[in-house]
Length: 79
Figure 1: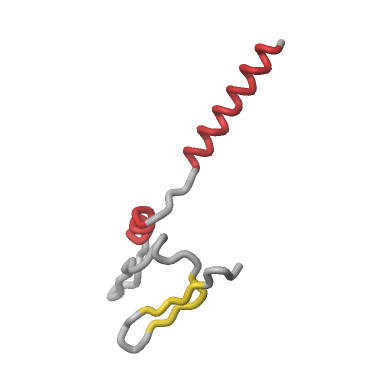
Figure 2 (figure 1 turned 90 degrees about the horizontal axis):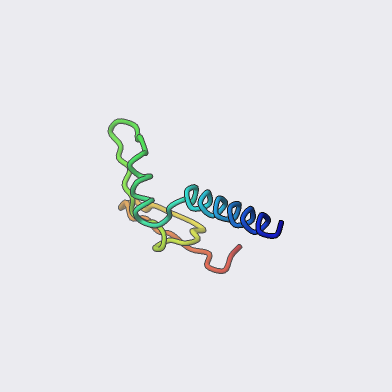
């Protein structure tokens, strides 16, 4: 009986770990670049990736000035 319980527990734990690993989302610059390729901008426009994790962690505000520069403020301790 005890052997059956241990085998069952290990099998369920292995299945859960495998499922969690397979469904985990990728993060970071590579994943952001892949997602940027999926964007379909209107003809005549283009979408360019200019920042991603870990460059930008918790953006609080974003502004684009008249010269096309992007200014981003971060709320490091804001939750």
